[in-house]
Image 1 (cartoon, helix red, strand yellow):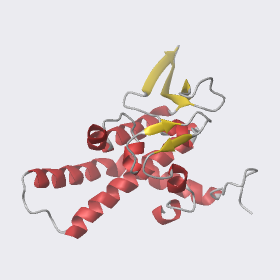
Image 2 (cartoon, helix red, strand yellow):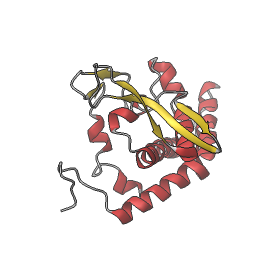
Image 3 (cartoon, helix red, strand yellow):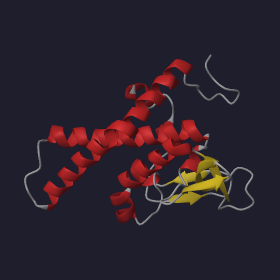
Image 4 (tube, helix red, strand yellow):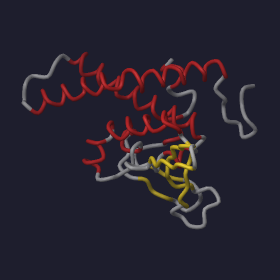
Length: 193
């Protein structure tokens, strides 16, 4: 049906284009509003003022989760990074280079496929300015969680994990559940459209 040679379900082209457009809109046009709403809720909680109704808090949390998804999807689409490579991005991973008149924006991370050791090898992926925006969103979204969990990873803590564990078999395990299950195409992306 709609599977690649490994049996992975493919997202249909039309749905993928729509998904990327929605994600781009979230990151570029809604991030600041979502952050402001989240920061307002946090401020109310820190002042010990009665929190707004449950529906408002739920809406802000859902918007933050969708913003996280949007940034991750954009990075997948723009870079071609594998899941375990994306899960190793950290603050400061965006680097810019200039060769003559050509500016390039990169994400530096770790890849484990064909890596020499169990910690993987340094690698970089071209991401462009939109990818840099997505990383900035993930950085801001994960600030509190990274501080609490004492990790520098931008994505893992947001999906219920506190640390990345390398298994040494070119796979990565995450505390708190299955990352592949979380990102499975049948899981969340159809509901996000």
